[in-house]
Structures are given as structure tokens and as C-alpha cells.
Length: 250
Image (cartoon, rainbow, N blue to C red; front, side, top):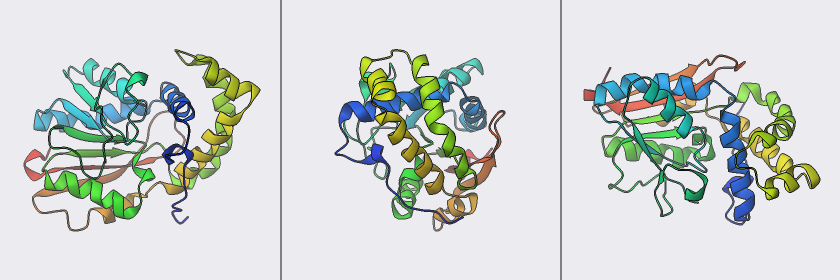
């Protein structure tokens, strides 16, 4: 199946802030019901041991998504890890984690933000040109970057379950706002928007081969590991890409 560069509502600057935040809050809740955060932490652990850098700089963080869950898993493994979240539309009120207060361009991260860069289920938002720029910026600054996705194009039919999942999981959100309740159950705008964005996420996700192609020209003293991750309870493999300076090889 070819990749489609369609639009997602959450990316649009004209989407009302409460709607964007409600969509992001749902996604953060949904991650608690998958094994992906644990698997992502297991992928990060060898890299963190190798580079002795226990700070994560998360890109395109939204409301934090799975980052708190990944941090909890890493701490159970014995890492004293911290994270700074960044986003084009910062949402610091959604999480207790440290959040970079200014809008952050994932293609050009401020040098003041030093650490292993991560992207959880957000890399597909970017066009091939912008995705390459994100990888190039990490390569140029000689910092590791870890790209993890939660979708794959071959499983796009799974998106038909998203509206049902929104109806089931919204009541498990904490805190749960009246805005979330009204626009999920009484005026079901959120299930529709989340369904569309979820379907598009599947269709925009880069394959393993496409991720590898995006690293073209970024290999001098820098190594890339593309692959597919199989998480318990997730019926399909999801792509990942880990890059690091050669002296951080594990």
C-alpha cells in the first residue's frame, strides 16, 4: 500500500485549543491500555546504557502521550531518567513533566535541549522532506534519536475500531472534563475527529524501508537501525528507527 500524505485535524493551527487538547488527552489514555510503552522502554534501555545520557528530549509531544509510561518503565529498570517535552503547540497543563514553554520545531531543536531525542507515534505527521530534516538535525548535532510508531499501513483496517475505543476509554480518563463528555457522547465530534486522525496515521506511517531511505546521506560516523517491533497484544508489527553517533554503538 502506498503512503498517503493526508491531513490530520490535530495538526491544523485553526483547530480550537480545547478540541486539540481533548484529542491529545484521549491518546494519552489509550496508551495505558497497550504494551507499547513497555516495549519502547526496552528498546531505549541499551542505548541509554551505552551513551550514559539519562535525559530524553521528546519531539511533537502533544499532551505527553506515552512518555510518562515509558519513563515509569525505564525507572523500573533502574534508570534515573528525566524528560523534556516539546511541541509546535505546547500543552504543559496536560502533564506534570517538564515542558519546553516555547513552540518547538522538530526539524530545528534548540541547542539548549540536550539529550536523547524521542518521537512516539508522531513521526508520520511529517512529510518526507521534513522527516529527513528531523533526522538530519539529530545527525548534525551528534545526538541519538529514536523514532517509534504505533501504527502501520498494512493494518489500516484496524482504524474502524477507533470510534468504539473512544467511547469505551473516555470514561477512564483522569481528569475527565465536561468538555470531553459532551463532545464524546452528546455531540460526538471527538470520536469522528479521532477516527479520521487515526485512519490517516495508519496511511501516513513510514515503512521500515522508507525509514531507512530517509537516512540517506546521514551515515558519516553515525549508525541507523531500522526495524519492526512486535508488542504483546498488538496484532501487527510497528516500525521504528534508532540513530546514534558511531561511538554510541551497542
